[in-house]
Image (cartoon, rainbow, N blue to C red; front, side, top):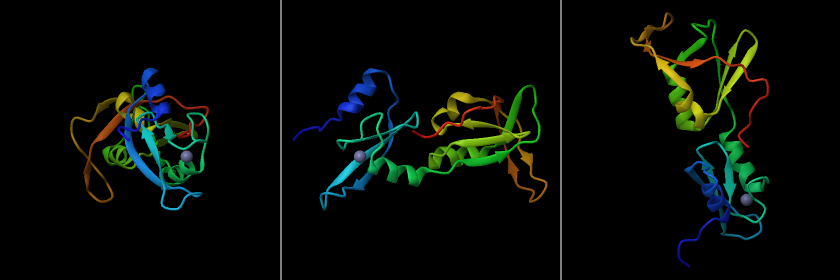
Length: 156
Ligand SMILES: [Zn+2]
């Protein structure tokens, strides 16, 4: 069989959805030795090649992957600067590396930045590194416009 294509993926591509950034193999429960492919798209959606795992439906395999990806990186910020918040570059890098969303709290409100949208939402970076007052390590601040999310977005 040549180039097994995923009809869901084709459909998504036609509609302009984001490309796959990571692929996971999840063992089938019904057939020993068989694996299903779950793909993580840039926009944070998951698609699976099993029968149940259509674009809108959850399946066992997507849930397995979701468990792996679950957990947002939680950050508290104490001040707004021209409507912007600054968070340490290490959190941004971690979010992108581990495919985790950023959950930023400011004055009891929260803003979720899905990992797939971090690049789009960055509005600047501190020109010079800032010194941490506790351990003297240097870090940069990455700025985002503050906009509290009233509803929490989930990966699916
Ligand atoms: Zn599936």
